[in-house]
Length: 223
Image (cartoon, rainbow, N blue to C red; front, side, top):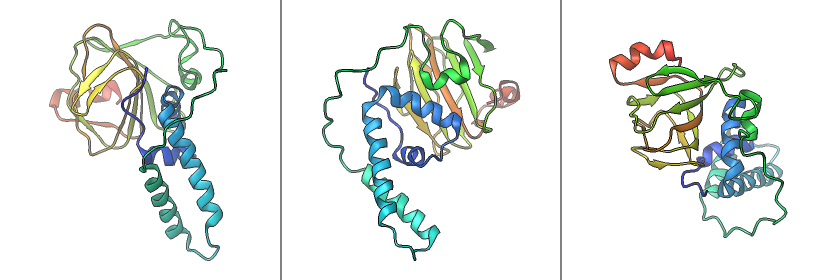
């Protein structure tokens, strides 16, 4: 499983700086577990950030310096990524087949079979994690071939595909893919035939639905 959609460089910089909320970090870490490309990018962000901090001049104004550091880190991350070195063959033991990704276990439990889905709408089930920092963290299970309402975002959203797939204006998203979205994106995911699409999503603001019915039902769904 090689992801085709990745974390945005700005998200990786924020993660390297420890600036993501716990909910956002849990989704990012779920993606990083299975994405060697983003792990290399995160390591580069951490390395560049440390090097730039060591080079900073004590007399520089802090707000200006912070902006310059961020711009330099983003510029470095957008440079071509060198060919990866082979990862060590002595990989850690694989978790049980039924285990949830480790970053999600503190929020949803350790195994898939222990999940208790809540019906939200025809073909849509959800589990909401207990509130932590204030950001929303949910597991979604959407039936095959179902169109979701057209919506945009009033904040940022990280969605990691765990099982199944969907298509929207941004392309095809399958297992391991990350949808790193902001307020500029409006889309309508349509789940692929075959199996339900299961994903985990973290949001720092509510969705913004175009249709009146979806807006009417939004308080009941809580997204």
